[in-house]
Length: 562
Image (cartoon, rainbow, N blue to C red; front, side, top):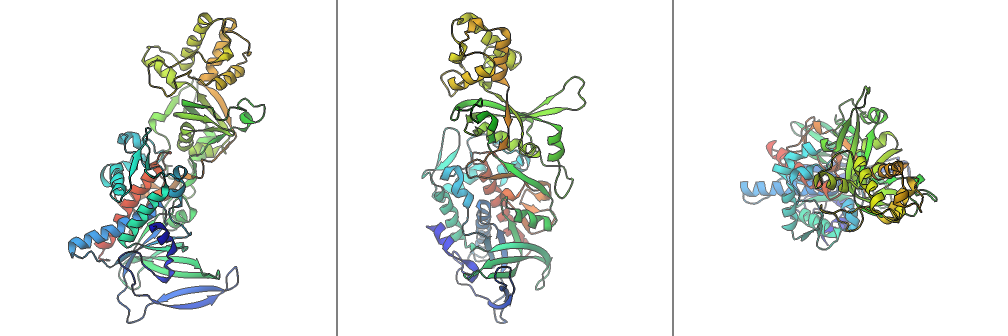
């Protein structure tokens, strides 16, 4: 109910949410001018009456998404607590206003996790949590250990009546399995804190200039909205601090760039891989849609053309943000090679679809290699190891050494003696014996096994006893390094995440304030931070949003502006 109440309020008439309602409404002077649509635009300029009370100081939060709403609530709560301790009443002279250009707030929260909203994972140790961020892991460490931790986020929601449950894989969901529960919790917190929400009001640009009415500088926001008759209203308002929480929308990056920030070029992240040649009719994977493996390994060899394109930034030659984690990189030194080549490697459950590959392993690879995929227009080869856990068991439990291909070749060759009369295409003869594995049957599903046998040029009627060593080597190669030709990128449901944004070297990560413009704060996906699936992107929104909101409030207090 709180969320719907927020959406119904349109703040162009200056209504206020929460305790600070019915404030003095300024008088307006309206002038007409041509517009592209009907040649008549209403330009709304605000002038305060001489007898109006002294103007209140204001914090603008640009963007009503997860991080923006969290930042606004954190700012208002901080101000209220500060003045409650100082004066005993909690009343302060500072407005916190959220500008949302659409008719809804927190749209991504609504669709996340298929409408259930995946919350952050707090069951894993911090290094493992940070390893789920292709970009920003080092910068987030301080926030996640000292400022707003995964446990702090858990406590924030549960203290506001949200019951959370943790599933076996560590992901958390509200007990209701409904994202509206999370939306309502944040909306209720915003109402109680006195946050003001102005819907369908877009921030066109932000200028940092001298404050005509006071000493120091301020932020001038150019705002646009439409009347019921679709007349465009242009308005400029002055704010003392700004929190930029526009997500991956270009307007946020343009605002940051106009204020002097460098932008790491945004590219898609978290996508599936299309392999049209494999899944088309008569293709090798045609008819395999729905086949899944509990664990597989995907690797992408980084070529020179990937490196040359992915290092470029649109506005500066600044070193690009880190896109690889050491544990996910293997350096290869070939004889006579002048340059090193590297492979980006990710593991996890794998799903074959009607279009190609999906599942956690695919999504993780797409995130960690987002720039490399983009550099080659999503046309490249990805190698698939279908049984890395089995190989791991052979090394750790049975003490076998050698390459994965060699280990598998030797084990499959044993089948020519153990089951010589059995047809090879009948099914995979290998099982996991000691290590924990989610599948109790053969390590390769029957339909996929038959396909890989066919790919290895082994006839469906051939028995193990009739197989040559070269055939076995070919089958082992298909199992450990299958070359999958990627033809394009797909989409991951309705969710969309980008790699790129405001360069993190230009942000004080202790309070999310700009190092270039005092009083400008950033949070959420507008930054060059992104995570894999599992609630990690929301954890970034909660943490950076909370810290940015408190940072903006502290800025106003320290500058005697509240």
